[in-house]
Image 1 (cartoon, rainbow, N blue to C red):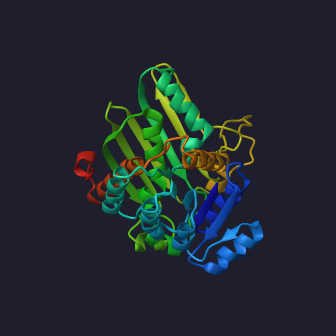
Image 2 (spheres, rainbow, N blue to C red):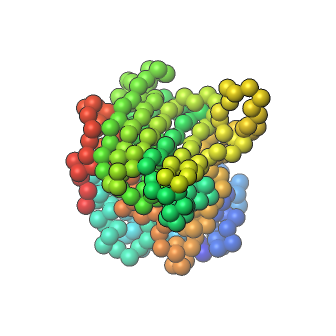
Image 3 (cartoon, rainbow, N blue to C red):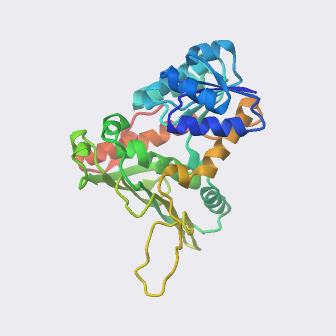
Length: 334
């Protein structure tokens, strides 16, 4: 297959290396708004170069991977759909709920598959949790704890364009909660705070946030996020049921030091970025996309999935701003 990639920043360059290594991919072509950066990557990896994504699609590709900055996602996704090319798009598919809904409507009217990049669905720990819940191994679920704790904040210029902590970070938790439980979020109650750099509050954002989610079957979820977790990049989930508890992210890399005497677990080394934490998952999701592009696998994460996670993030932002519980019925949907 001939695969086209738009965006050669950190995640795009990583995806390029992964795609080039897949047995299903015979040819890879890269492009970027910064043509010099795309050309440099194409020379370093010995892959093809296109002056623009539009020209890449016009030349013909079997699959299209979008890894640009967020403002480029929606217009490029439209291009991929219009060209009838199976498309992989990093989250979010759009910067606003309204545009995400519009894209979901467009995708529903076409046979062109779109795979959204929520990589946790391909992490073996989260997959094991989903299987355990589906098989009833834990009995009935009563509580879930989910967290996304970044080791250090991104640069200041990123925050005003990020969409806020719930939409940028916690949205991964909101998606994986749906994936693991098979349930929808019914209501949220969220809050946030700032103790770090001033650029968070200046952008109307928070550097630490928490939310209580109630699922449609009454299961309670405690979700937290922060930009300041100096111990390391810490992404975990605990699924608590009447017959047992299963933890995701509890291995030797756990970014926690025990206060108990004589305790030696975890021994490390710790993860310091999401790229380290989810390296195998990123590879697995692009392998899955190659199967989607070949027509042998339906999209494992659709634009509608992305819309539902975005609606939860939107509800959390509304709850944080207004200081009240928010029902998901208040958030528009299709």
